[in-house]
Image (cartoon, rainbow, N blue to C red; front, top):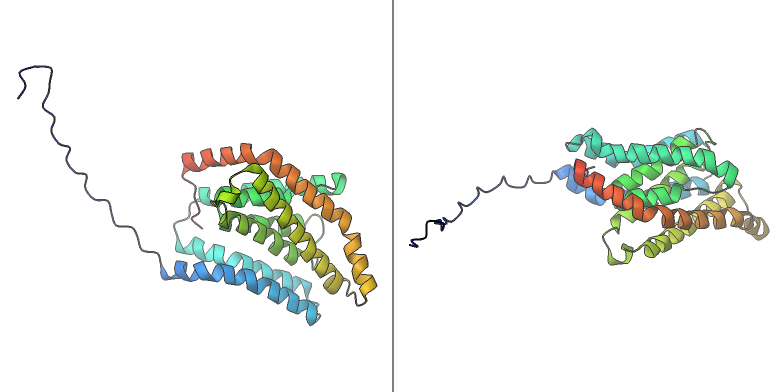
Length: 257
């Protein structure tokens, strides 16, 4: 033992008691894990079938798609201890995107919706991204125009947010330009799906000339959509993701739904 009075004897720290074991995931959560991607496949199949069989009940179809889109969310909500702060990102992002779509789309022919849906998925997870996209479509169309295209928009924007959240941790989604490329691809996919629905479902085009006319008519909006998505992603990606990271760290918000 040292005779130096300034040298204190250091005792080994007592081992900390083990924490409680991780709570096992419920059976419902495991079922929803594989049910979610299945629903993403079933929804377009149902919508395509409605075109083939000339299903005319637009209100019923919209309600069906809305219920399918919202079902996993509410099941997880009932199955987990979700706090109001966990659903606030969905509500805030959806409300902001709805307001911007109503103001900007008719006047400037630009839409920040796709960029905001992608950012929601990247920042708060795939389920939050899907819910944000689906809610934006159905709520904003209450002011713009509801119709048989609404469920298609719900699905397209929902899928956009879901995929963004699903690949948010991948190496090819770490840089701003990579996110912009993803946004351009998803916007093109959105345009193709909506134009295809317009040609075969809404307008019932039967000849090659009428089908080509529908796609040509959609080129201007499609180009504007891709341009808007890339520009808005370029502008908001870094500052918004930084804010989202701080919000999640401060309030403990995570993918709990």
